[in-house]
Amino acid sequence: MNILNDDGIQGAFRALADPTRREILVYLSKEDMTIGDVAGHFAITRAAVKKHLTILEAGDLITVHPRGRERVNRLRPEGLKTATDWLDYFQQFWDQRLDALKTAAEAEERKNND
Amino acid sequence: MNILNDDGIQGAFRALADPTRREILVYLSKEDMTIGDVAGHFAITRAAVKKHLTILEAGDLITVHPRGRERVNRLRPEGLKTATDWLDYFQQFWDQRLDALKTAAEAEERKNND
DNA sequence: TTGACATGATACCTTTTGGTATTATACATA
DNA sequence: TATGTATAATACCAAAAGGTATCATGTCAA
Image 1 (cartoon, each protein chain N blue to C red):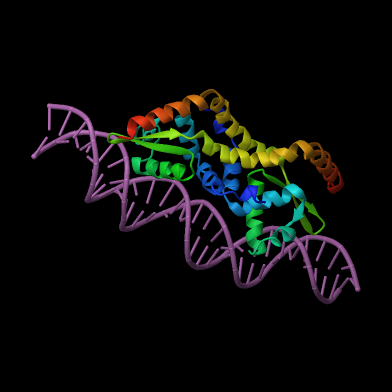
Image 2 (spheres, each protein chain N blue to C red):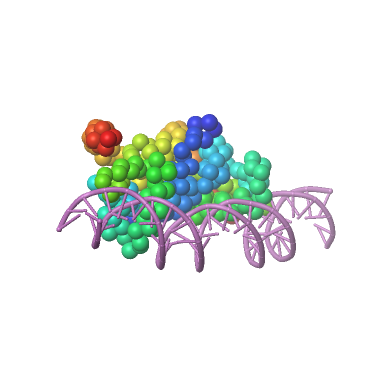
């Protein structure tokens, strides 16, 4: 239970919950981008993009690097790993239980399909 | 971009965004539970738990099986795999780019730390 | 210095979300 | 059948989320 309550997980999953933010991560996976660059790919205002980037930064999924009057947003793979690690906890006993769960579920189905 | 826009991803990540729901998933990973069972572990009402379970079901993270007057909630590992697969897309080029990103980032740091 | 431009910061609006309270329905059992 | 129990379904509320509009700030360049 301690492993699962690590701090940072909430920020990461919160940031990942929005489709626009996930799409931003895809863009940033290919190249670093300024706010303007990112906003160019969406039909929302720069201010809205900025909010998304702030949430992504708060979730440690990106880092922001001032460069002159611009701010370059860069993917932070380690942050995404936080979410991956949490889900991997489940994978551990999927491997153990997946078959058992499946057969048990199917047996239940047959039993309950009256 | 198509792989990443698969349907179901939004439901899964939306469901995972709430800490109570993630904790419910941990409980369900150990044993199937009725709504009452789950509610027994939290300080919120049954109705609130029911809402969380509805969202988890909508995200295909659990399945619900009526058994008499009870409803048994069961983890659905395949649903969690939806989120894992999406994150794995990033892992692919972490492996390719992680070192490059790190060294590039450190170089940027040095360049920008005036 | 002055102007253009990229971003930051608020204020405000609407929708969604997490929660409670309440009432209704279904079912096991005495 | 009557009754207690498990869940369903609403209605409602407060807070958070996603968005726009607006104005301030900082920086590059002429």
